[in-house]
Length: 529
Image 1 (tube, one colour):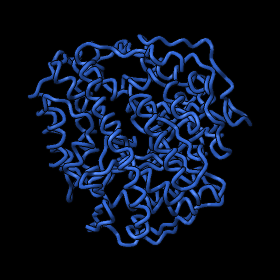
Image 2 (cartoon, rainbow, N blue to C red; image 1 turned 180 degrees about the horizontal axis):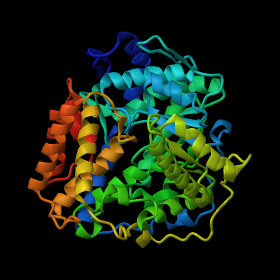
Image 3 (cartoon, one colour; image 1 turned 180 degrees about the vertical axis):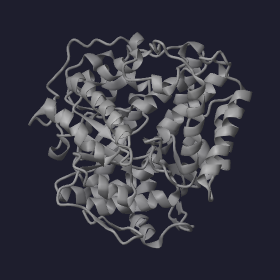
């Protein structure tokens, strides 16, 4: 441990070079300032989330607020996009890990989102090394040599760098401010901004961010106040920072305009974070049997609540001059199975065509091989235009009831769905506990969001004793039987050392507990640290 004023830092498990570069005295003083100024408000907002959840459990339903009707009816627009964030037709995402960052930045995508959240397991070494990697990426000096001696380096043209800090709910126990863990959000944002903002501006870019898991405009207001103070502290103009908000909670869907309004001098757009959005719908209405969802594979973007959310997001963004960015294509091409790959690419292409038709300005992919597929779709729609923000669909009129219409026509819970959820959750949690936050499973890149759906559905189905398609009732005995079978198979397949036993204990806690755990990453953090 080392101490800098009121900041206590754990350096024991860190590579010395990365720690010395990232955790400088000035940077730690900046973090301390952020936590002292905003930590209390963050805790109040997290408490407000719990109050809102209690209201929903008692039967309250979200809607468009009358208190903010003036914002929704007002004539305002967000700040114009900076040049290198104006064309976002394809964005690739991945953890802030050196080799993956180089491949993503060189992929031909317009934007690369370097993730410190759902696709990065938040071990302390991952966080600090990720920040060191981001410093090199901002300076275009990022390189990597594989164990086999293969050299990786950035090309002459790279994607625009955007960083996703952890959500407001996550702490960072290795940074103690006045004896208390610091906000993971403020730590991730503060270190990246402090070390790189001026350098990015010097190179013609800027400090750009994705903001995760907001539940409403007051949480966006807190981020905006953080931005204002941070820019003042470093002597940078207001509006230097640009942020895209992931609309990945069902409560935020009712406040899209208000969120953009709060961030309007710093806002770049909204993103349809589809997997977390499904998880949020399960979580918020978990106690109501009317909101039980079928197998995850059946909850597509065409079902009522997902279609309404997607259409409203694109319309809202374009009304306010912001970018609308579509959801993730998580497929990983299988170079050993051309038939599997071709079938998947057809589905990816259809998904991106749907987004382009709805008015989205760009979309997400998880693998470099998907960049040409997505780009071809958006090139065909956009041509030489950087975006289609001028296409405001006046024919779209989404009612609040449509956002809450969780019906899935023909949807069923199946034994295969139970088995898949158990298997995906175990595989993901095992990788996450070993420090890997993006795990390839069945030709899909799974991150914390998809694992959240898996364990949340298991909890929901068990809570309500759902009848499966074969007339079997979901029960604790059935869950444990499936878990044991999947665990045995996975341990046998893995061969060497693994953390499947810990993953199973964690999954049991998440599925069997009477109280629903808000985030698996919070429960898993106990095992991780």
